[in-house]
Image (cartoon, rainbow, N blue to C red; front, side, top):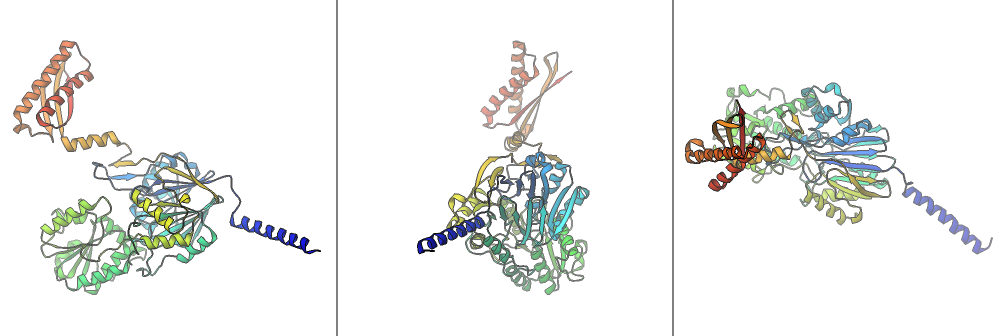
Length: 581
């Protein structure tokens, strides 16, 4: 064989090797794409929920709720829109939960009720314990197929393989998900931070994440909550030292509020109390439930005889007591809020009390928290909160942790999640700064359909994903019209006009009732003139031969509106009531 022929053969062999290598690095293209559809959690903090759909199969990651904004008068909670899931209920293979916070599990019972079928739920032990409390309360235990898993487990559901990966967060047993399908693979971080000294000793499994990254991950979905914060989030263990320092010099009763789900924070409080020989009172429904679940499952180590009932606290000196309570977000009906307003059944704030708020306000709750702090200060207690002591650390990753995960995963495509609009934009820029191609970064909103495979990713449409409002027992029956009415009532009040009619003519009235507009007894001239305006409107209708009650009401409403606005520059809701005798 001459040299020319030998070179040709070598080139041919090299080309074959290169082709095989390319085939390994770029898996064959699948006709069917993986759909990723965030139903909640984008452009907001709360109601986190994402649908993953491949062919005729579907899984859901998380199902949370959101607490109402100030403008949502009377609303209890806000849920994701389950419409798309209900329409495709026959495809549902399972509900996978990253951790036990309300913005990730609070909507589960509502989804189960809506679907009306047995729902498989996969969660770690502590997360499932918190879910169980909700299922028992709503009598839905038999409506779900509970599957308790642990970090490192893999679950195969149809075409979906879901691996549970240990992460650190402000609640025990938190996990990320590696989701693998024939079309594409996804790493969903859930809520996380990198804690090198966690209270339970369980460090985030960065080794597994790095290995998956080296194998190739198509899409990364990462927590954006703290993306605006530089550096690293401090370890949860750093808070324990502050508790010991505060307890050391304190001769008074100590009242501490924190997030009920933060088992590790509660553990550190109990440890500090035990060290200083104080008894511990657990107060507030969600705190009591959490402590019960955590201690039963072995996540809380409570020394013998340290817990006492709140009814027995009078048997102890103030210097012997620690109260762990709910109300860290300033909620008026939570235990600390009721204490601050003197409405608690067993405990009133005293001048000598030390109150520690071991939490940061969730966005939107700043005003409520400030009001509670001011009230506690007015009562003479010493209030310790984050601005003056290191008594809280976040459970979410800051910039350097997010950059570390981004570089370990090396995703082809990136979708920032779990954050308000500005956070998602910042996270996109952060990912680009560490080498992710800007063209492969997607900023989406709730309802966006993202379709991807090993080679491509694009936004292809949108599903219905409007917030669903819960008011008492009503789910989704309150909309913008009702909210606008409530807002108007709160701002301008109500003006009711009652007229008794007989055969189209007024025979009694008009009687006027004012609520939230003017005080009738102090506004007699205004009320009397308003009556005359109504009489004029009724007379005008009679002269025109108008007998339709809807038209008569409109005439009364318009006439009164003109008069009241001219006299007060206010726009009360005017409600005419006509009664036939």
